[in-house]
Image (cartoon, rainbow, N blue to C red; front, side, top):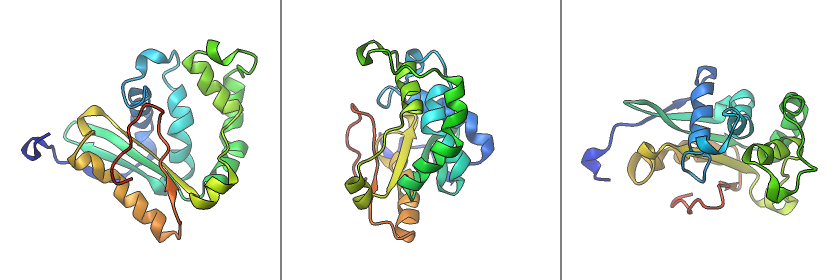
Length: 186
């Protein structure tokens, strides 16, 4: 993408009013960075797992990226992954567990994408203690295609990383889907 073709993009703090757009972007990047809308019967499910709890519980580490067309990405961060997981266990997952059935008895190879996420709601992944010791924080960064690539699409990671560094965090793990390529600078 040529620099002259770049649209001015700005970061701002996310607000509760951004919830619907965060969920939409989460879904539209749910297929390893590509649009996952066709994969999920419940369009809110991906957002419930990967965006909603961050906006609800750590809004101070939630940023949205905007361009002339509106919100085109977000960065959601947590300084303490273990404490965040414990809070989700107490305050976020119970309501979702009542809404989504546990597919634990469905063989993994037969699970639909919705069932795989429902499984995560009922059986959240817990990072290994040695990983948490080295990387106590984590980020979720999702960008729509118009914000991906070189230039302003790379800037959302910087402020949360500065926040993490200012909080005395020794390291963070960006995570990411299996098919997502490594992101320079992360």
